[in-house]
Length: 288
Image 1 (tube, rainbow, N blue to C red):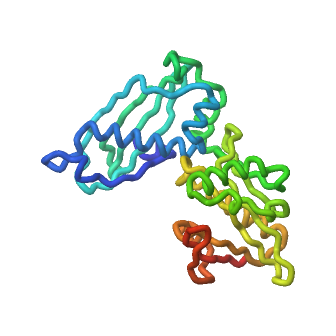
Image 2 (cartoon, rainbow, N blue to C red; image 1 turned 60 degrees about the vertical axis):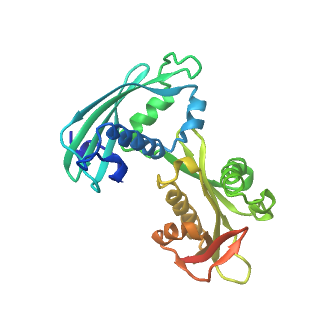
Image 3 (cartoon, one colour; image 1 turned 90 degrees about the horizontal axis):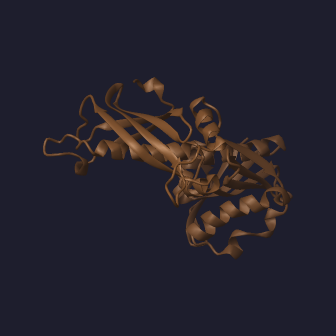
């Protein structure tokens, strides 16, 4: 087993609470590291676990876990946990994991998951859609697709994502979140391979008399899949739509917590911090 066997890695740093008196990681924690990497795996698939399992009509249960110890991890080591779906049977899936310190393999493991009825915990065949998602990810395929269009076409799905993020999660009043600008805006919605919307945003029409300046807003990503680069894929699609219609600049009002995300995407700060709907914001822009 080597690093090149894996497409997905979860990085972590060994904490004090995870080591024994010799400052070596207690053996049971390696399974916890792998389980944490599994959460990243679902994010990389673009699948919010709870709603996806509901749509698929089952749950994934661990049937067997085998761990082989090659070397020890120690306090403050930076580890990378590689994880992949190696084989899919009728109702079971075999996942292989490798825990690395640099290129050195410390731990190898195999976990057998069974797809089953959540009420009776009796096995069911792995749904074809889930089988195709696992196979596609391991083959290097894209796990989500951006669709752009008007509010009549995408409004229901965009509104669903935005309501979950802005209204339910952040506590912004619904009457502030939705406005009349949605009707004339260009919308983008990111769909996973189950056809579920997992991110949304909009591009407003340029204001008269201010040149070809577009404004991106209402950027929202489903909480359970954040960190999977879905926000960047969505943002790139909106910037691309602005370029395609001839805009020379795009602007946005970023929540301060997301300022680093927009900086990495090429945006720069153009104004002073301010508060909107009780949340700190900053104006940012990018020349096209």
